[in-house]
Image (spheres, rainbow, N blue to C red):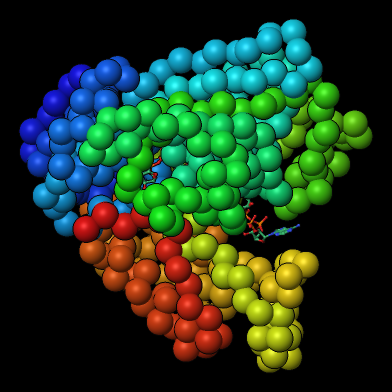
Length: 335
Ligand code: FAD
Ligand code: NAP
């Protein structure tokens, strides 16, 4: 375990904002993690820092989870279970799976962050969520240091949501995740621009590697690389509104996209709302709304967490005034 007193979080969060915490513990060992969970008061848990925005200095302990290891059960099985330590990097794991011809996570290629954070918001992209391959996870309870296993049902996954963002918020440290991958591939190319890229490449019968390559290509052309321009991906969740509200809005804004569900709700792309409220490519001070994807807020250089949050609040206000839809942050705000 490494302990850094009065640590700067700037290089540990992809927004690249300046913020300090009282003590930063970098933990690679499960026994040390159990002790930290038992004895440190109310710590914040950090993975790759790609979905948090610290605002100002954090007068708390921060535990950065760096537990490693990937183990495969029943190596020869068609649908093997794979257990992955919480501190492994998500995309490195996707590459590991592709190398072994194991499918199920190819649409989730290039999502930043760690394995341990992946169930927190049920990471999703291009029509696939981690829920679809999820088997179980182990977590340490804060306060007692006890280990608990959560089944898929117990995680209560929803759209960018799980029990860890609801009633179990801030109560557990995820130490490992078990996923069920497959050698019997069912590629999913129906979503977003994947099929266009495959067509351009003349690929008629795509492999999981082709799908991963297409996703990586689209993401690299559209999203800012956090190593170059600070950001945390989509800042807001896509709002899900009642169908009758959507129908009324659609009469006024005829090109407003919407994706209906069976439960008479419609998901509206937040990026479209923000763009049509006039924010795309705009900035307040050092905080900007990304020019290629309005859903992504960016640190244009030297922004503080407060500046980014002020921009987010202005966006929430103007989108609310124009569309009567209240945007909620997807990013976890640390104050
Ligand atoms: P962190 O940012 O470190 O933490 C996120 C939250 O999880 C915090 O509340 C933290 O306390 C908690 N947490 C972290 N680790 C643990 C643990 N071991 N136990 C308990 N709690 C923990 N997300 C998507 O869903 N789909 C996308 O396509 C996507 N694209 C992105 C693109 C870019 C360019 C960026 C910057 C982000 C994107 N994200 C996306 C958001 C982000 O990558 C994911 O939410 C990711 O899972 C966060 O992982 P992390 O390790 O960085 O978590
Ligand atoms: P996109 O393909 O331009 O689509 C815009 C929005 O429309 C997305 O938010 C997506 O919702 C929705 N959408 C598109 N096709 C859909 C379909 N067939 N059915 C239902 N909903 C559909 O989006 P993008 O910005 O380039 O992102 C591509 C994918 O990567 C998306 O799945 C997005 O969620 C994911 N992504 C996530 C983050 C993050 O930080 N969370 C960052 C970048 C990209 P969904 O978002 O619900 O998929």
